[in-house]
Image (tube, rainbow, N blue to C red; front, side):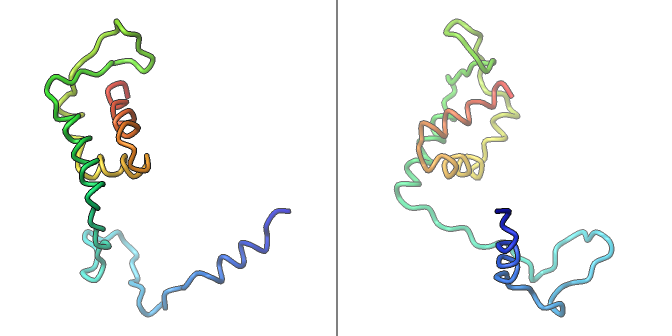
Length: 118
């Protein structure tokens, strides 16, 4: 009922790293070890590149004005993106939203536009 056996099975399935390979640290370190590197980024497919470009061009539009309240009516005040909001829209950010919406461009744009009232 509570799944007690599942936890034991999950723990035994995980591969533990030998203690010899671990680095003993008692204080925070300034830089990670040289052997520690992030995994390589997977290249985008042609379709994904097209969708990324579409989202990027939407937010590069100088005339883009977004509502400043979450529940906005047609006559509510709108404003352009601030410098800080534009700085937040990095390549990685746009790709993260596209992956989160399963590469549906309209959904990604809608979610990102929420930054104006957050």
